[in-house]
Length: 125
Image (tube, rainbow, N blue to C red; front, side):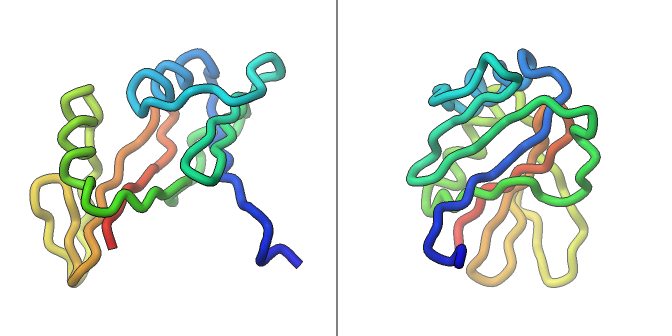
């Protein structure tokens, strides 16, 4: 039923203005819709990211959205760090931390948070 339909990441935020500064100014998204109703939709490759105002923003303790950035992982981490993004470091069995990138066999992942504490990951796998 849903297997051949597009999915959309949905990320709750408390302050839409602050979130827009982050998603547009730091991550480089351009608004593709919404904006007047407490939401902003961004295109991301062949998918979408919906950022919306919610009183429950930042309560998720797990990853909210993930991007497979392939061989650009190291460059993107470097660019985001230069823009002031702080990366999360986790102690996970079977995983080595190399700078801000967690490495487990052929998978490399970096996690960071948006202003509301939503966890975002970028990976090369």
